[in-house]
Image 1 (tube, helix red, strand yellow):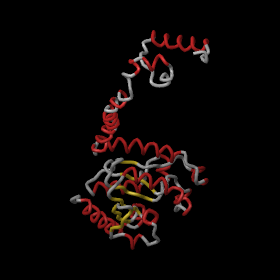
Image 2 (cartoon, rainbow, N blue to C red; image 1 turned 135 degrees about the vertical axis):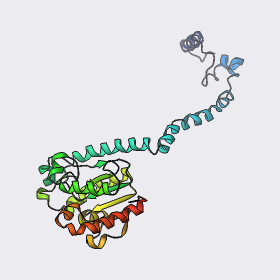
Image 3 (cartoon, rainbow, N blue to C red; image 1 turned 180 degrees about the horizontal axis):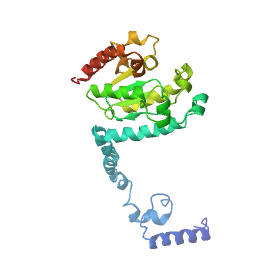
Image 4 (cartoon, rainbow, N blue to C red; image 1 turned 180 degrees about the vertical axis):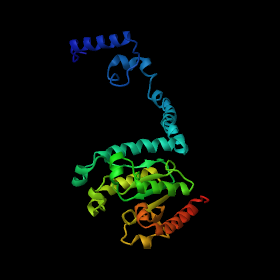
Length: 272
């Protein structure tokens, strides 16, 4: 005992007494070398088996981990309500990102606003054009001019409504003078188009015109060769037809367009 510093001994005793007054009856480790704790039978009672006994609480922890997953499962099962809300919210985030895009200097400096898309965020069918025009640039809504009015008639002739489908363009900005998109502009906007389609998850896409079809399918074939058959884009059925603006200039092509629509509706199981 002569080796023990009296001051340290008093400090240890005072510490133990204060812990005892605070209601602490057991110390996990570090007290074994001290003579008093090792001689005290109370220190033997909270032996390590006491902590392994607490380990049956691990299944409870596991079930607690599963509990947060249970809300996720109903969200996935709710094909009508849950997924619509989820898709819409995510599309809104993407729309905000698109609105701030300045990848194309000319388009960003000349646009009134971006034109993202419109319709059901969980649509089975998407109609895709090439780029916004003057009316779309002014309103921020795709296909609202004369070509858009014709597209609405085509959709309604298919016993659908604009609210049931989703309408979008390859480009989200109007090219000056309504010119065709450049390869660079299409490449810059492709990330947004791809993400948009991933969020909507349509079963069918109708490409309106050569620009839309060639960009989506990554081909140089003409619209005349692409129409009349079914293509694939990442597991999605794709039908190509003439752009409504072309039909306004060439009414004789409306029959071919209607044939394409009948083929598409047949694939979808829609009776005309």
